[in-house]
Image 1: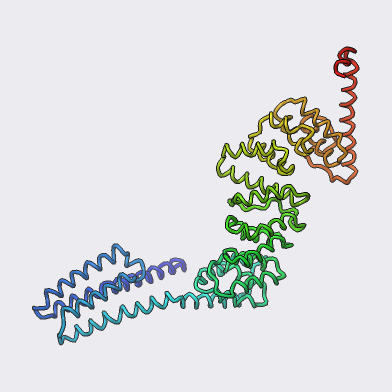
Image 2 (image 1 turned 135 degrees about the horizontal axis):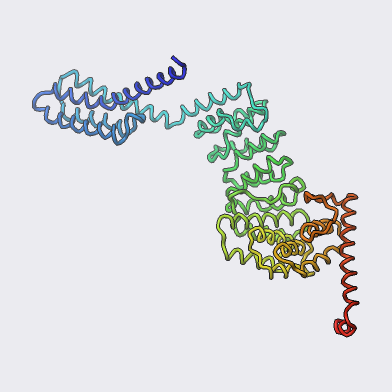
Length: 480
């Protein structure tokens, strides 16, 4: 026989034996009471047969309503033994029949045995023993994934996580193992654990603060992500500035999944992380599917006024928050609020820029608002974004004139972005590659592109002056 079919046949036989044993346990009180009814004197038969009928009904309920053949013997089924024992004691008082005494003993010992087993399982001792065996198996394992982070996804880790619902100590014992793979696996088994005994969370936090491997730090942060202690959360928030992107992502997930409750605890750490040099390439501080509470949005909006990396990432974070909110539920009132913020000159410039990009992405920008944004009083990047949006939607002389103004600014970075818009929207060759990539600012190609932009702006000035000279003298005098 094929090994697979042999294994399937063995499982079928074992399943049949288990169900047969459960059926036997269910029917045993009924059989005992029935035999006692047959052997009892005539004056006891009526009450015993009534008890037998009651036991039969109970067995039917156990089989069909409680699915007694497919599930372990439950407390409700054990009650049948207690009822049968009570019925025998009531109906066969003073009898000398040895079978009755044996039946009473069986009906007493069996439920007591099952009750003891149930108490043993509820105490968690079998689960704790299984957790210790799984921990020993991990400690003695020799075949590990090549990547240290891959140790978090082993089947043994999942099994250990399920066995640790009573106590985390078997996994904590592995944290002293010299091999980093074992420590990562043990910490992964504690991921998002809710219940900790006194001092256990401090052990994991100490491992996170002392470990040299980023994977161990990330796994330790993930293990403590579900804790409610403020001191521990504030200590975990320091990992938002960790040198490793893996640890920073894990810390952000741990902080943001319950950001509404934790924001007062982590706001200072978030502000530090937004402007930290280690996080300059991380983009907006956010978590997919998680929205910031109103007080967090207010803080981030205020931080967008700051200069440098802090203001930039704060503005990006606010825009990402509104993008998630609009993706979840497009709200006309929110669109109106965003348009007011973009038009308001008191809104931080970087935030205005990020919000107008969001509105353009959603296709909800009025051309009148774009014309307002190309005014000389607006920041250069905001003007350039509005100019490109206007040129994309219509042939606008106002947008071209604003583009000429931007081309005259003595800023090479702005000049490169102006050249990109001129080449894509107006068809003028500014010396940029066709793939749309911009050369680094401090290079010779960038200097050549900036020179072409200045020449393009100068030609526009010359053509404007020549048009002015061609006008009649009385028109020129009126304009003056």
